[in-house]
Image 1 (cartoon, rainbow, N blue to C red):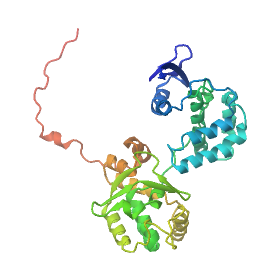
Image 2: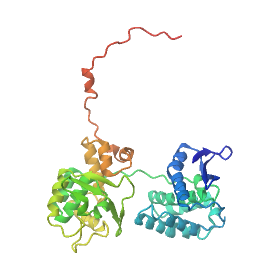
Image 3: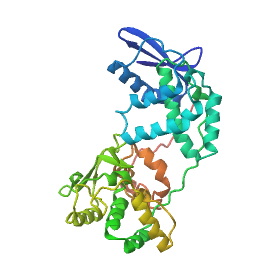
Length: 366
């Protein structure tokens, strides 16, 4: 499968064969380094999968395919590649935001101006971050439409995503952790402490089972996550990981395991797994108000782990692996501010090096 720039349109095209028939498809994207990587990492794998599964259709699509029908069909098409929660969230966005705006308009009739109008209407109601997240789902729908031959060009390519100001992370400090644990109930204290010193996402903790914990090897297998009552596998390959338990986590969970009443580690008073993190956020909010500390959510425990580890000189590759990031670049982009900037002497080993052969003559250049 070859990716190339069309000499006239300057768009990115994909050249491939299906059942011995050569096909050339426009992605509708301008040929830039960023778009090339997007096609290589997202569009080509999707295309290869559809060809391998026999779902790629060679015949031209009817140009009157309606947006609402096609958008919902993409959710169904990829439901096995996403967690149930992600599929449900995308389904809700399509029903709540996209269909009321585009209605039953043919997808081929939707223009860049239509998308800009949608973007502005959403920005009037919610944050730029939320709008950007939703528009990325819409962009994917149009990319699929291009690959399926329903439209020739992607109207989204001329639309700028909203600029999102980077949020200032506000992790808990060591003193704040001690203050919170000093007034917390035993059950909340265990959850809070484990969250702060594993860096696990809140949903991953809600889905954690005792069978995922190995006290002999002092490790935790992070396999599933939970959101709004739905348990599914972690969001990507890097999130599926085995993390080592620091001593504070090991001691806490070992003691807590002596009183377990369920296959799940964290359960409510009825010994049922929590539906969501709402209960923990309510308890945390009450504690923070009592201690007159700044309001934060339970998810800040993840930022707390990263900030404490990096600020105390732990290796960024190790921290990235524990957090389940796809690469250390993600960790660096999010937490560079917390990396220790001590003034220690650099490369002290060079003092023991004896390098001879220092140049004494100038090299004349002609």
